Length: 84
Length: 499
Ligand SMILES: [Fe+2]
Ligand SMILES: [Fe+2]
Image (cartoon, rainbow over the protein chains, first blue to last red):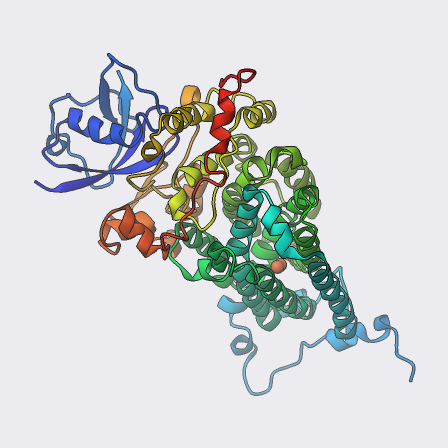
């Protein structure tokens, strides 16, 4: 297991942020780690909706239980975290 | 003894294009220090500086200017003004001095480059005075804040900032190294004097002087207007140089250097002057919005200058005009949120009345930037200041070294304009910053931004506390909300409802 720093673009926020995750994190865990730095800080949560993860400009989100390693994230990969 | 008129001797006295005897012309003026365009010496002899002065005249005028600025300072008892000044205004002073005073010295070195290596005698002559000007700007802008240091240690950053690894200092040094210390004399004439000084110094030194006069800070208003009279003179070094370059078939390359310098300066002004004018200056004292000042000074005057001289407006002009509505609001939000990382106390500028003003000046502000401020306001009201403070770092652009920001809320458009180059991923805040990198990748590729340094383990402990230490910020230096959140409680007044 290694730490993978990511460049996170959280939906409706104004800035890209550095978010370190572990290589065995699932996409749900990645979304949670990203949300920690945006939701309830500058972005209002949307209860009942699910956060998904995709590459910037990616068409489809990664599976929610896919890991960081399986998804092939490089160090400082730019990802978008958004409400489905 | 009667003195000759200046016009009787000026041309012959300043024509110092002697024929070197002990070294070659190339050794005396190496291309990489003098002129990357390699325009022949005889062409440079046609350089005609629009502003002519002698040393005697220069000293006389400068002495009067200094006497004026220093006597206003002495007469007005600055300490008293500072005690009663709005905290937002004090922050403008701290930001201004820390961001600018030492760069004036660096600008002096750039003037010295033109004074020694400039190919035209007229350029060398004007730049000699420019060097003296910038020395004055450095000294006076350290002397004026110095008396506040005993009262407020953030003012010590007037001198300290540029020696630190604070993100704002890295951003400023990187931009000015690119247009000043890292260029040959001819490029400096284009990038510093034409692109920066004829355009942007008006914004910080005349636009802000107008706000200063409104606020009652007569000393500061007087000081920066006095500086601007020097800028207005030595800023004219670039125009005759551009004329020669265009006449000798170098329009395309000259245009590129101007475009690079203009964009780099624009981004710096979006973080320095934008928040100062639209958020820190007390509402009742704002003469114009940042955008209105930019439209007047840049879009109006500079655009005309560019076209008059035979250049085109930069290729990204539409992007720039659109940027005037957005970028500085994001930069402000970033500076306020990451306030422990700066040496001034950012004023939020987001009370109900201020929001009305922002919505009027920037239609749609409430649906975008306002959405982020809504969450911040709720957190402060609910006693959750912790949620208004950062626990990680923003990604900074590998060109302008400022946070990568975009429009939040209903018009969310934040994106990373990244580029993979020789196995490394570079992150950029806009397509123009990426374009600048692409013009000369190896010039920029080796530099490490704050995030690169963090990831390389240079910042220890690897958390925000370590980052503050790395930036040279003691706990007492770190920025706090300028008004201690008093603005939030205006939302409780029954006649005003948060939008
Ligand atoms: Fe200056
Ligand atoms: Fe200058």
